[in-house]
Amino acid sequence: MKFQNILSETNNGITTITINRPSKLNALNRDTIQELHKAFEAAENSSKTKVIIITGSGEKAFVAGADISEFADFSVEEGGKLAAKGQELLFDFVANLSKPVIAAVNGFALGGGLELAMAAHFRVASNNAKMGLPEVSLGVIPGYGGTQRLPQLVGKGRAMEMIMTAGMIDATQALEYGLVNHVTTPEELLEFTEKIAGKIMRNSSVAIASAINAINANYQDGENGFEVEIEEFGNCFGTEDFKEGTQAFLQKRKAVFPGK
Ligand code: COA
Picture: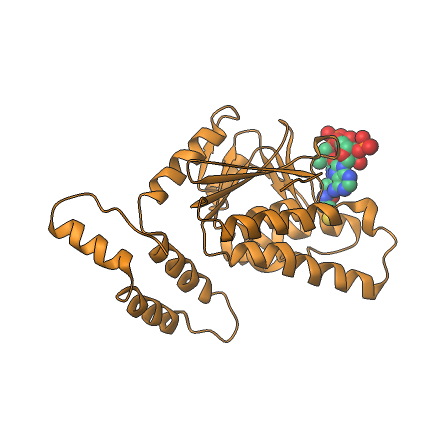
């Protein structure tokens, strides 16, 4: 698949998607969002992909936000559509993928950039990363899930303060807030993230997909996470991965999961 604004590469089970507009600090314009949708969809459907890493190109930015130049003259209706379409194509889409998505935050993650990192299943940051939702400084609010996912990750009070002040926090503070799970040097960011991906890949991809679904259920309106967990737990017993995992344990050998 050929892209203009992103790169997508798969090696040893890991698909790394890199937003590649460094001269615009990887700002998310319409085309980039479309391409990201296609790349994530392809990775979700590829038997070669077990884990997806999303990152930004260059040393300065993961993503410095939605492309402000594209929506500066939008009407109320166009603004609403922009948020709805973006959430459908990218942010909710990523959050609900059945394959693990890790954001490797390599610099500024602002506005839509932090929202994309938060839509990933978890985050690793380099120590030069800066994160924030500066939308109110532009007279708008986060529209790609930021008002919902930030409080889920850092708590309501911290999210309120971050959004109201439009300020940025550094990687150390993001770690303290639980917004990122690990902080590395910029040089080690991808290698470190790939190591975590390697640990994930040793496990059953079928069970991992069930776990993602059950965890996400807690954050979906009208869903009872405990009920979804019970259903997914039961479903696992009908899978080849479960047979292999339990047999391997009893036979004191390493499991070789067949997957889907
Ligand atoms: N949308 C569109 N273009 C953006 C952008 C965005 N969100 N963020 C950065 N860019 C562009 C700049 O316009 C500039 O382009 P130019 O060279 O053609 O003028 C280029 O990226 C480099 O950015 P610049 O502002 O010169 O870099 P800096 O190091 O001085 O500042 C930031 C870095 C991140 C502090 C600054 O770019 C910024 O505040 N960006 C907007 C952040 C934001 O409000 N995001 C939320 C959007 S809803």
